[in-house]
Image (tube, rainbow over all chains, first blue to last red):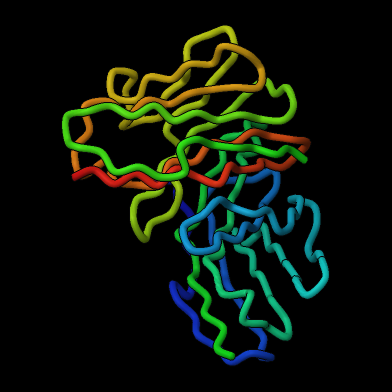
Length: 112
Length: 112
């Protein structure tokens, strides 16, 4: 399977704490993207990091990418109850298609 | 960005029947994608819907089971044919905009 792996599969933290999720993938990539999915609904795009970038920030989100290890991490700082969701990484092969390969996802629960 | 809508948002169907899911994009796009998300799982690409040509199916998915139409650059349908309980999933369509894919809200299907 080409699917990437994410860990942890589930994460439960207190409001205000930071949450870190990791994603590993198998093939060379053009970019890697993180999505959020609330309770089985559609996916919301969070952030994109290109293969020549190592770190990117967007608000309370910080994404890192290590192409030598084929891994990425998503850090959510000062978490809120509204951050409770499933988070998926998605990679696009360097062949330049739009065919996304999704990771297995991390279910984050932020307790108020 | 792209705004994508899907109909129906959810449905409960009897085994052996078929359901057609509609996907509408607010701008013209060359490619649209259909994904399946089985309960508690990640997303799996079913097929790429190309305007003016046959859809391209991923391994494990066939046209007889998941026929796709793409009559114009803003619309596509996915039919789930001869349904069984194993087809109970969320079905999502997506379309690219720039380097990113945007997703519809999904269609939650339960087959009894």
